[in-house]
Length: 80
Image (cartoon, rainbow, N blue to C red; front, side):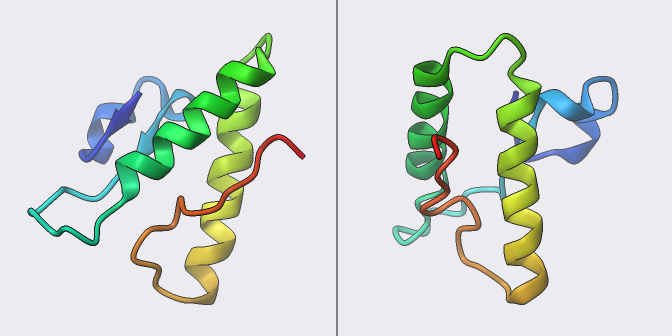
């Protein structure tokens, strides 16, 4: 699940990725970067998608602690 409303993840918190609301900002590439991540998940064919989603969330959390990122999903590599 990909959503801009965190409350929508209450019942399935480990199955979703939060994105900021799009405000017609042409520099916002979150969905493009998430496409790449989702494509990588398809390539992995995991038995449980929560494992790569957790890897993504962990990387985003590290980036968020370091600095405010325009797009925290940019250049995340889950294949390694």
